[in-house]
Image (tube, rainbow, N blue to C red; front, side):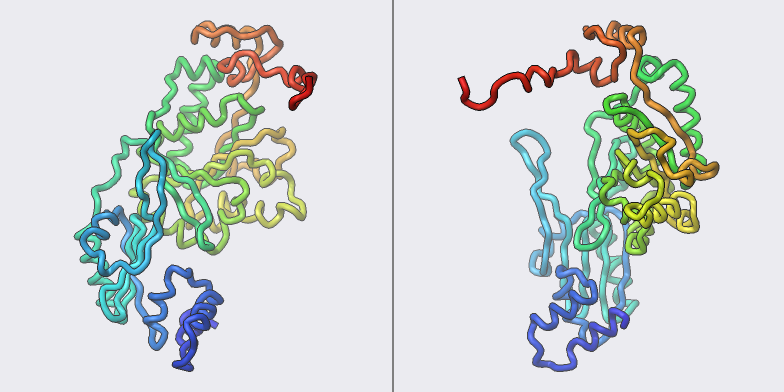
Length: 372
């Protein structure tokens, strides 16, 4: 049964308790946050109109406190000893059968007529809109699931991390700057596809991704997706989310970053079959035509362990192996950076900057606790 029909039938008995109404709404998948709104429309349909952009929710709260019905807020640390109040969502009642939701990135108005919904949304957007984001300020988004929906939390990169060509060659090899130029050209040309970065821990994959975010900030929107949530990348429930993100992107391309993705990308079995097939469809299937997502995935395992469909021509945009350095290359980097490295056969970038690795055997040989 359609959601609206279930909601409208929920009030057949006017004496039903609020709990019964609440349970009916939850069965339809309605967020608890919207229960007051939905109750106002139980005996009739509603019209919904969305406006995307950047909106000053704090100003809305200051100017219209009496109309604020529900809110979700959190304290988000900014620096040592300081924090700021972050408004995740607000619900407003402007009159009988006239409501709005706002989370700072969109205003959604619910009304008893389409004309009324559009008019109220336009008024709110005009009054509380913020100027466009400064594309010179690097940022990315962390994806998460909240209330059964995909959400993104913006994270500003306080210090842009761009590696110059000399440093890039020093850290990743003399051919790396040319490879990166080719990657950037492909990411500017393709709307979907997969870039694989393979290497042992500490070989610089994440550092390079930080550089890529800063370099392509003006042309690409980056989203970090934990590998544990990869199943939501191509699920039907995320279509609305990516549609909204595409409308806000202002011509920028969307890039999803998945670190340590081998559990998702290894050859199909009963454990990962469904997730992998969704991933393949997003990266180069019919769904990719709509979602327009590029994926940058890091792996630690050999590429031969991946499902062959990942590396087929047309889906794989670029591939790079980040290897450990031999003694000669490591010493050149250490000398350039004024570092001292211990004697060993090969090095990761992390080991060069961290110095002598912790000797676990030393700790294991010592007695623990209060033993004499």
